[in-house]
Length: 290
DNA sequence: CTGCAGGGGTAAA
DNA sequence: TTTACCCCTGCA
Image 1 (cartoon, protein in one colour):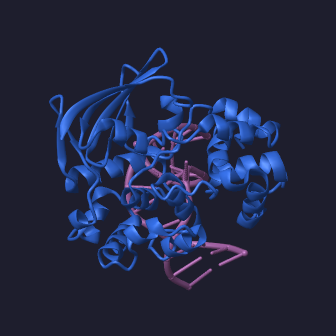
Image 2 (image 1 turned 90 degrees about the vertical axis):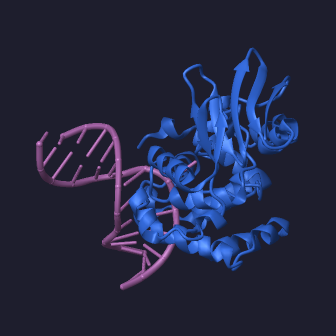
């Protein structure tokens, strides 16, 4: 646990806003100076961009370079990915222009599972608020610059939390789901270490779907945004459904568009990069407001 | 000020 | 396939 600092140069595809406000993460907050501060694992980091350089500093458990490299997916060549996707069609090309600075984070699997269970039928400000409360109540404190931050609690730290306590935190009907999923992980009904090793995405998805509160959309988000990092999945939420319908399907009644239909088109067009394509498409959402 | 719709879905009927 | 769901915010 030490205070560390690092400066990265010539990193392609790294816009703070694109990365932190695309909906993949919930614990990064924009500061007044335009930088972002966030907690992940046992780290509290602040990131800012000056000229073309990225400056990262804060409390970091292990070597900051390695930590950052892993978390921000720095070893992946996003310009290569963008080049491939750009060729798909003009829609994708435009979408990439809108969100060209995105990177898909390698977030802790456990935290990602709980975060996206909480995200169900919910809005981002409230999701963030709830996750912050859970961290503050059950996580471990980390002090940096006179401020206290809190890690996301481990399954063990949530072991004895009751459904009622969750309800009192404002989780609503998700209280039971969080409780049950925590118990299932503690009981190793699903072994998070094991599924990390399984290369068969469909199998892993089936296993995630056994968890309470995890349906197809949440499962895909977990597969894409965590260290599972399956770039071929295509999470379908109302916005992506809207955009996909608008661009490719053109069904007058949006609700009639089936998940299967969207998945098929996504797979045909974007193949094993569908997940990243989904993120770019997400930037199209405001262009298609009802 | 009160009422109501709707939000990055899921589980249960 | 359809419906209820906890809480919160925005808006009529």
